[in-house]
Image (tube, rainbow, N blue to C red; front, top):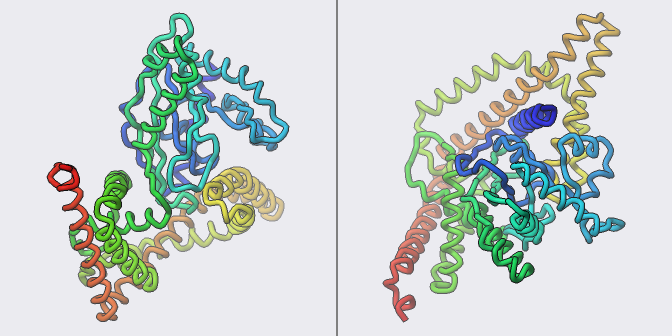
Length: 457
């Protein structure tokens, strides 16, 4: 009973933390998660933020596996124990004994035998690569060893992909993609003959399943080409810039990335031409400080003025409380920023160093400000300051988001309507990219239908 209540509390805390850090978290395929014992496997690109998505948005009371060195960090060690995280001892960590993993794996099997859920990030490390890294065999070993236990049935392996708009940026977007569960029973049966081969085979299947729910690029430069290309798939000309759900962007980027690999081999000159067009367009976008969505918009005067008026009114109404919130949260904001600077060259760790210190620094400063106000103005004033600081901080956050959006869209409106030459050149380069993409799509459809000379030979 206590464990269930702790899991529920931890899940709620994870959802709250993610709701504050990310502007939006989308979940796709939650209904694919089966009942009964399961191993959730995910990609690992955002440090200690990644496990929060399993415990929070997916609402799974999972037992995590974490590297043993995390227990050397004060406060975090106690939180890990509270969450029931199971330590894993890696060879790459100095002073750790991998033999102790026998105990960790035994705990995993016990959890699964009781119908529980494990969560593992089988890449083994959080990384900054643009594609999945080679998987460790731990998840496959646990699944097969559990399946070999007498009476073990119904175990599933659930692939979960984590996709981030800008993982290191505060108030960006995140997407959780749940894939079709894997049944490890064929490898469990094969393990009775050759355990090593069975582990390798299941690891390969897990890798393929994870590749299907993640974005994988040859390079970050290619990722940028595909991002621009996907922006241009939507040929509508809305009155004002509009965003798309991250799910739609994910599906389009995955399809384009898969097709690009084969097109590079079959039609390298056309791909090279498309890349040149994308580069030229992207350079001009960057020089102008604009986005593809802003260039695509028609910027009709009436809707633009109405949006600006609504945004400005909200800013003015929130301004007094926002100013109060900024004053109360200015010190913790700069303290957390100073901490995050330590990992500015590691995008996969920046969110971790922003979020987790915030969980300590902000409440501590709110309490200190309340005590100071209480000593100066009395206990009631002190309590009011301490209790109002989080609410005022959120109002200040929304105030800043609206202020930045108003400035960003006003600037784009004035630039695109006032500098006709720049707008015309952007439209020309955008059209060149659209033609190149249309050509590649036609080539890809031909390859898929098997009508090309190359595919027939």
